[in-house]
Length: 293
Image 1 (tube, rainbow, N blue to C red):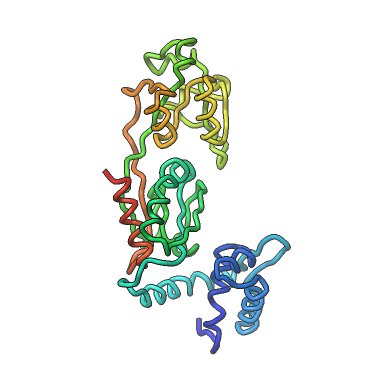
Image 2 (image 1 turned 45 degrees about the vertical axis):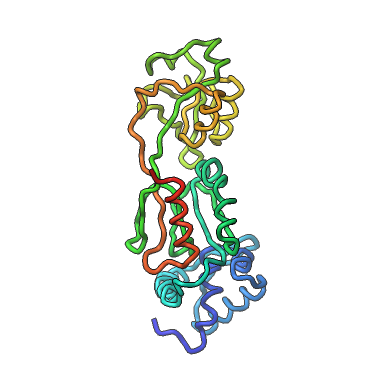
């Protein structure tokens, strides 16, 4: 596609609006007003002679032509930004991080204060959503989660094992007894996570036969609600280790059936390939310092 003259200054507003699906959110990202974003997008549409967004009062959606334009120019814009990076510059600016919610709250957040003491000029925008992200398309600097790489311009490095823990409170076990094998769970009150994305109940110990809708005692879409229920003696919980490490260490929960747990999976840190900005580089190094074995 050959772009008309003088449209390059309009592209940041278009790309930000395409990422955010909102002129207001794009304005916050760029540090301008929503009216300025809307004006730039409107001027770009006039220059190109095409409609780039469908609009309503709450959000904007790329048209087919808008999506094609974004697919063509987003990698080029990323490459231009990469070429302009000064690797010797002091780490500063906004760092956009996507992280799976549980790890973000229970493992990452407690470490961010020390990071910002080391690098006081770095600001954070933290997105804690259980979804796969398009790092380059959404202009995310770092993502933490499962690998799921679909882009060849993204680098993934192992961060730490992602294990599961089964546990219950001492009070619950004193009243209901200790399960000795997975089959014993049928006689216990199991606190089970339902995936809000697909509506399915979590498998325990990778065994579909252990739990179903009729045998689960308590179901919640938020793992933190299950943790609170377990701490209050409501039953047995099975969650990623970052939810349970601390209460187990403090004796508030007792680990169960450890010999039957599947092997840990891997948690990955991902970032766009090429030359890293100083803020991204120091953050990736810090993550590996704190979480890699």
